[in-house]
Length: 552
Image (cartoon, rainbow, N blue to C red; front, side, top):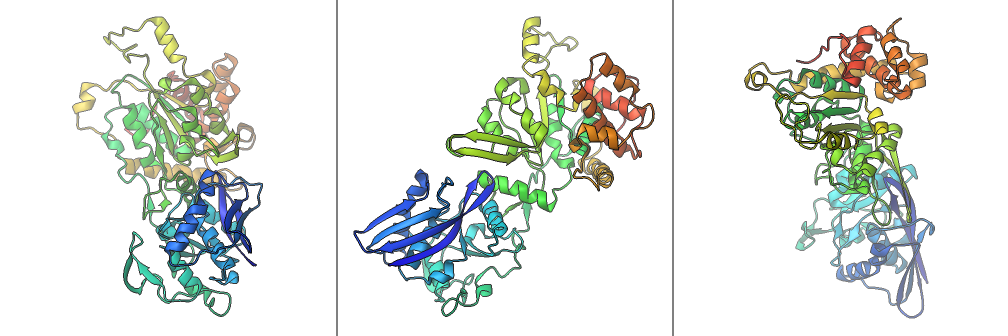
């Protein structure tokens, strides 16, 4: 009778649960039983693992084989358990020393020929392993850089099961091409001389794993490298200011105007003026993108704010997350720490738009399905763009709008009041004039505006240094009103609007947040009446005599 165990990770959203993979061999009729609440793709690993072991030149045990995944109550799915199952089977059959794999974390899919294929969610899986106290992980070679982003973890990337068995047994490691085919038999330069821990054939743990310091590999990031420049936008002085304020304070933005006015151009340039992500933010965003399977090969770290712009035909699950079985991240999570742009916002379904209200307030989304409940990060900046009517020419001078008043009201009412109340900035984007379009007087570049945004964020971060918040949009209204006071008399105009029913309590809090952002951009120690007037104008569109300054 033989028994061996190793470990892998089950992903629930972007959170990992360590799973112990146990293999038990007993005399009896040859059979392979997999237990532990596996899904369809995991159940199929029995055939993948058997073929991979045989095609790697190893012997399949002709005994009763039971593989258990513990804890059995946690749903498990995907092909990332293949490598751990194969090694547990080989160790139970005495091909590998059981002690050499007992403290290893293994993640990877096996091809029928024994190749180790990359899987989704390597980064959150390795993060879970690190939190559980594991210090050595084995992953597919293509995901080595992604796994090595986690500090304190030593990573071994392998191309095939044969290579891993050789390393575990302190044998010469065969070289294999990227597609898994044998080369001329020379040792793989990436793995030559590598040995494993545990005594005897399993010695020298430190030499067996990635030579770079743990967590140092794969530091190169990726993002929107081709982010367009804000200087390309003609005119739109107020809209450009709103964009700058949104970036400086993390505020949500609503752009309303006729087709061709530049709403999409403005939204596409917002990521270019946002500050780079911090290390922690980069790991959060990369974990979500890894689970979604959209990390580009060779560039494992997301270090710039993401930009997500789903089509208006997107369903509610595609926006907030969902799908059959365990839910998958939606657009709100893919835009975490970045920008979610909904062009032609009234064309989205009402259910999909109203589903955004929870993540807008909480910074995360909770999706419940029959297979389980998943919590995903979703702290993003929302930018909505809309036309004034179905044809887009309503209220334009000489526009010739053919929409009936009922059609205009119906179109504009598709954006619900509770959703709009959560948007800090609402700007009318006017059609660009001929002089603005062909003139040479362009506005400031993204680099110039981004510098002011960084300075404003630095002021806010210094102000909130003793609190858990860092940007003005994060501050709860109660704390903003009681801990950080405005200049005397600065709130008179906002209080009058609230008494007249033009502002809700939530709306007043959002005006305060925008006023603080305007003060940070202007270098004021605290908002004065001018900052509050500008904040009201950017929220309501009503000119109260304040002069909107900013980038031109």
